Amino acid sequence: MSKSYVAVTYDVCEHNDLYEDMNEYNLDSSVDMGKQVKRFAEQDIAPLVKVYETASSDIGELTLYKEYKFKEFECDCE
Ligand SMILES: [Zn+2]
Image (tube, rainbow, N blue to C red; front, side, top):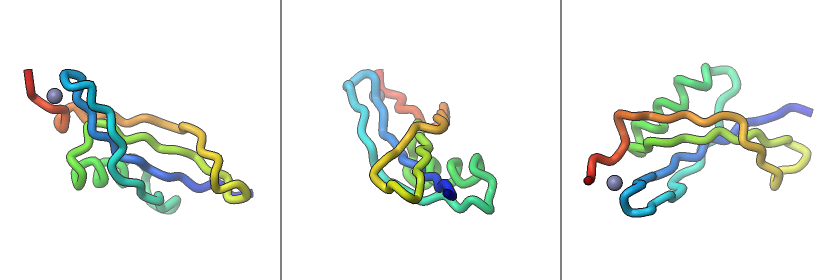
């Protein structure tokens, strides 16, 4: 069974207890994962992107594969 990966961008603000998922993207397995994730983060200004692994046989099942953090997109509120 081939696996596919889905990236989810998150909007996070510790000060306001915000932890919200924004958009979901299918990853292209032929392209470097880190590069794709960076692009989604830039697009959504997301400080956190989580990549989930999904088995094609069972679409509903998502397993956390990797987390990417982008300091440059963290909020700067006090
Ligand atoms: Zn904040």
